[in-house]
Image (tube, rainbow, N blue to C red):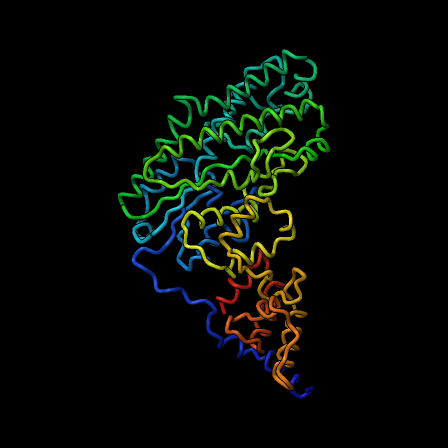
Length: 457
């Protein structure tokens, strides 16, 4: 037994076992129409307030379907930028669209943010007797298309003379005025003749028509817009106080956002030639209507609850991109039992037990009932892939290579250990785990998943 184990250990450490091994995944023979093309904004690009998610929804969908993904999304793009992006495609990009089976578009959020931010800042600039704009800013400083960052930097919400101070000292009439002005800013976006009708929807229709001109047969999936201000009551009370004007301000914002996103849904679903992917309901993940006491669960999918709206991130985090991918894959409809990037990323979440119910049901439907409760390489199921896992694989290999050939691993452990998916647990599996451990220990950026890493060997 000792000799056998020593031989196994020596084999596992052989560098040639790593360099000569074939790639794990071989793409299926591509149909004439088989790829995915992504257009849109920072959500499509996988952007965060700072950096990017490890695995964006396009990457996850491509892994699940075994197809090429061409991602042309750019952070900051609105619907007008989308039109320019499609009209100015290179020959290579046009070929990707022509060869695609599915085009996914994520757009509209920046249209809303630009219009809303400008309206609020212009209202603040008009209040010359107050200090609704932070020191050093005037109406002349308001950009044509202000971002959320611009809004948070320029608008005086909490400091002396700002919105909260005005509401606190001005009584009912001041609160009513601020509430009405916020309502006007929101409604100017979705009312007849507003931003949606004049800009967003016409530009989206133009982009869809241009894509169809390149590839009449491609399916165009457009994601709707989730509502990010679904802050949990316990968080609001802890951060701002239950009865504070700030809590009231956030409640008003949340309610207006809800109406805005619902109106966008209505207009989006009226566009011919597209299929709407309902991400909003996935993020909200509750049957009842949103309210102050039941605001929805988007705060799980975006890192908005950070202590201040100024520091919160409205972009989908990794959990959000899993939900996006699951919703898109459900819409595409080619479902199967998955043990790839979708389920691996989900199983790698530290708080997956809190995954909201409706989104979880969609994930389970897409990942399949046979989705293994394991992460590839994590034999000990401790959330880490390291030398301990490799050692356990070697020990199991030794057990199954001698005596009665019986091992001790559970079914989940065997699946986690079978790195090359050949139905056997051997020294090559252990060596690949060790290689991945070495890689993650020295990686300067967010490391790839073990599935993606093995493809490079």
